[in-house]
Image (cartoon, rainbow, N blue to C red; front, top):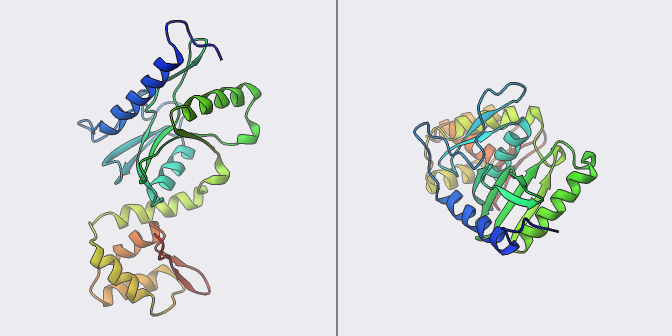
Length: 234
């Protein structure tokens, strides 16, 4: 791999680490949005852009596709993810070519990851695969994991709609640990066939029904036609 003469590999590594630091120190602008190195303009023609109001990031994350929205939802759900940013890095690969990976992710263990979201990994061209191999090697040299993610790893359109509904309702209030644990303990007692039964049960014990949406979104409760599963590992 040949880097531009004025930029050694060490320079590029140092630049990436500095960008990571800046990205996670960044705060929202006056519109409560956290922009990255490459600004995503909402409403761009031919793109399904959106803003995801992330609780983890303490601001709205700009996204330029439904696949990116699906991945942001997955990151928000994942208990091992502490924080994330979109379009946060501008990385020189070779021959003056730059890339802007879709997501920069920080785990609770203090590790960093870079995620690129594509409709289908199997359909990527040889040039694209070579470029991502170069990017992966470069990031690996500074202990950052690179992941290629496609639609098979993400929620479907139907699931996105349901998850957004739970997310918006479930985060209307700030729930404390006592409320969450009390709700889970009470919901263990019986099985439920649908979410409405869970809402009613919480109301009967003096809790807001929206707490059920929070538990559904974060996968603390799963309703099935046969039984209810309480996910204790979250």
